[in-house]
Figure 1 (cartoon, rainbow, N blue to C red):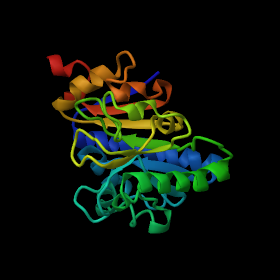
Figure 2: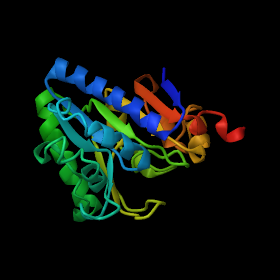
Figure 3: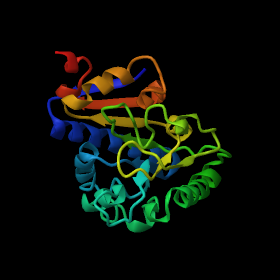
Figure 4: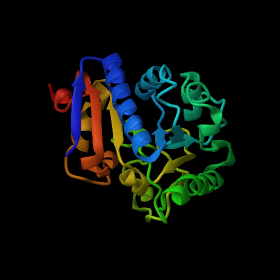
Length: 242
């Protein structure tokens, strides 16, 4: 069953999300000696990254990954890696050698191939998974259309087979069109997903996500028993129809 928490505003969402992430990291460190955390882009996750960056000791055993990336260089304003770096999380609280960025500048096909290889190398062999690497937690935003990572409504990428763990996207409806994304099987295999939503523009998407699973709302395809949703009152279910 999905765990859903509504907060008064975006800063409170970030505070609550930070506590959740730190709890997951602590548990993973205690059980396996390392914690694998995947990041997304966006304003709401960015606030959480700023708070997480204040806890370098708790991040000592963490390795940072990315749920998706635009096919731009790491210094580009559109880069999710740049967001994580500028908030002090990547390369600050978590040293660069434990930050595994998607190489968007390589283009979608080669960038996805390289990232899939890295995931298998770092997680597959160490934890014994032959197909889908298992992340401890994936932080996700949600678009007004219900997309997560760079998995958009009705996209053929949602039908990718289990062995395709990282996908090239060449036709994103949001610019830029070329992206790299973790596949739905990887998101579903994660020990947990944390979805953050703020603002009235996300209310209908949250409603749809909690409805019947459908490729028209990619967020609805996440494993609900492993999904934690933290949102503000404006994005809460039903608020879009008040």
